[in-house]
Image 1 (cartoon, rainbow, N blue to C red):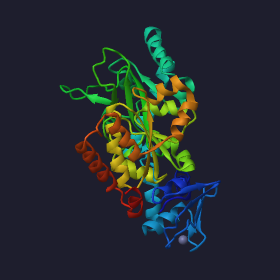
Image 2: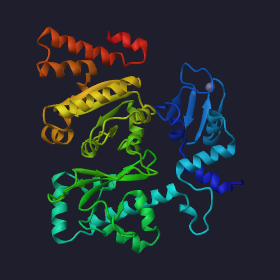
Image 3: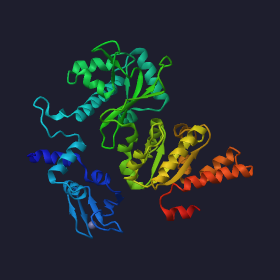
Image 4: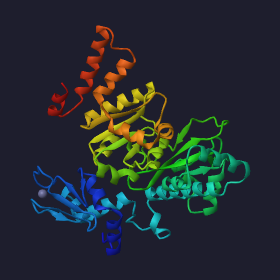
Length: 412
Ligand SMILES: [Zn+2]
């Protein structure tokens, strides 16, 4: 297979060397440069230097070096052509040509395009709102502090309260068939019909969900209307480009800052994350309401091994935190807890107390053991001997999850 040079430079440009290498090993930012433990020799101190500006890596110890393609060749032990194919696939750049539309021939890249088209449509809907719908939606946006800048930053839009707004839009554009759009989950086939479809998201605030490379893989739609019988949030179903367990909302926006500060704040929902962003705290990702998965912890560990969990202190929040803690401990993370007063989420807390108070909470972060102890104390579960025994058993359960023996001995 002969790949033209222009194609190769297009693929190189779409695959930032820091991102690619971070997919394999942990990369840390030090000043302007990036450092990692060299995977090509037994490295004890980070000797692998990566230059984002020059898009090259170099090991000062074993002299390994090269560009993004040679890293894949050497790390994966594959040929140059296979490295090119791999990175083309990663960026959604098709190598096989379709004479009609060369840029969107593969199924994955067409799904990305469909999601992008929908995101632009949803964005424009906010600008084009009229009369009552306009009054209602802008009222909601104002009440949640979602200003223009925030909408732009996160690509937030609106799906009309209609059964076929998006469906019509795709038909008018004529680039994608309804069958294709259905695969993205944005429209649903009517049960009793062969080729009739309707919109999945109707009358909802639309949050595009990005993967860590800025591609839109799905949407979260927040309920706005009382007569909407669906849940508070509806998400796109799983598709060829969207796997819920592998996505951390906001990672694409936050990854540089996470690497820079060497810790990440993990929140529950989109609105929590946005509240922090508006207060210039940007090393934050959201698990979007689901329990943390192993894939998500693996994703995070490319950027840092330090997680601050931010949860409101109601019982549901604490329980969610406990599950997350176990998984993170198993993956070797250092965990701290930022707790907020009962009934407060990050959004309401900052609104009521200001950013300074919130920064204080971050500084007063608690180790996870202390957090669990506080939880038991508050729930009055440490009165009797039996209760204390249960507590100690639970503690040992957590600590036994820590894979690193030395770290574990520090807790015992
Ligand atoms: Zn080396």
